[in-house]
Length: 394
View 1 (cartoon, rainbow, N blue to C red):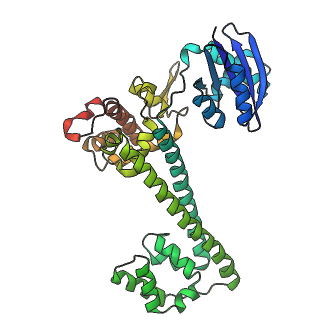
View 2 (view 1 turned 30 degrees about the vertical axis):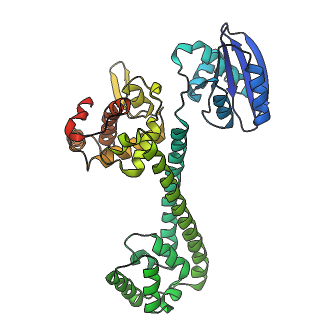
View 3 (view 1 turned 90 degrees about the vertical axis):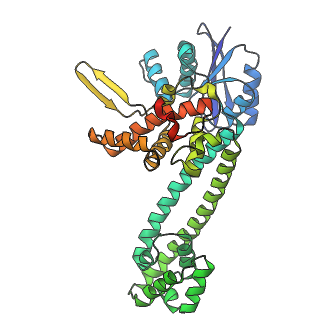
């Protein structure tokens, strides 16, 4: 007899409800959110035959524990569980007990339409987590750079005009060594020259240009303003230098995994993917080819496929929202990058623009086409070559 297990996750404990294939409640208990609690859960459900476990949170220590012990896991969309629960009870009440039962009942009632949570190899799972962290750190770095822009405008405006690439490494180190205009202006030309060369700023004509900018500049800023903002500027510079260092470490680890993987050469051959995007594309496609039976499933999961809405005479096409947002962002970035390296990509994008599509819609449509191409490459492990017309799959 099949058993369906619903787990409602929380930070302190997890409510567990077990029902059989006839809908009868067999077990009802709560476990703590720690290893001892997971052991209790394993002991209680280990004897059940053909058990399927459903939950709303597809990651975390509990999910890792259950995966390592070989259980069949099903990640269910919280919105679907909410709608399903409303079809069972009209009261609209919400608590962990009701939610756990609703998850188990949904799994039982929709057994044919739910797919088991399939995992990739440990290397790809590691790469996927590194890619997510890399994206977050890059976004955080951009926010910190914007903050630094604001800060230097308040007390040290010269810094915005000194370097072509604001917040480059040499500029961050300069702000730490010379945190105010007075400190920088009091330094001799020889000292500034040696500092820039020591920090890999080699071209002498660029160095002379920076020194001339410093000598021609003057400002009058309140001492109180300068004192307070220079503290924040030094803090942001330290933070950005550390962030840059960590990002480089993560990128090195990502490239090492991709280069060593058998599918790495496939994704690195994609036009415009480069070192980092190829790693992220490999992480979202994975190496478990049983996860997808066709490219359409990928398009829906990754959010590139548009969604049709029709009611009577009314019809519209909207962007798919129930999808993997991180995967959609990676594919959007890759599609945009491919415009410079792939002729068919550029032609397709131009046709979309001629039809009146906006830039974002055209790029998203292109990413949808790219999935069809990459799916064929991924399944058959083919190296992409524009001249071989692999794009016929699109």
